[in-house]
Amino acid sequence: MFLFGGEGASRLLGFLTAAVLARRVGVDGFGQIGFATAILAYGMVITDFGLVSLGTREMARDKSRAQQLAGSVLSFGSPWQ
Image (cartoon, rainbow, N blue to C red; front, side, top):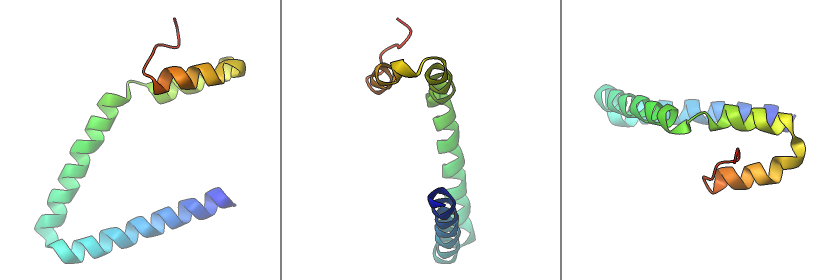
């Protein structure tokens, strides 16, 4: 129930923010914000390096290594050494 409520609140807040922003900055400004958001999204894809997918897979393989894996990811070390 908490996840459902949080997801709903997040989407509602995002919608309201976009509506207020669109009114304040106009069509051209909102287009620029959308373009900048798209560029940042590509940057996030490039810098992810698959850590979410690999980390999830490794945690599912051996749950006893969870603390070691989290420490390796947070310190940017390799958990496969």
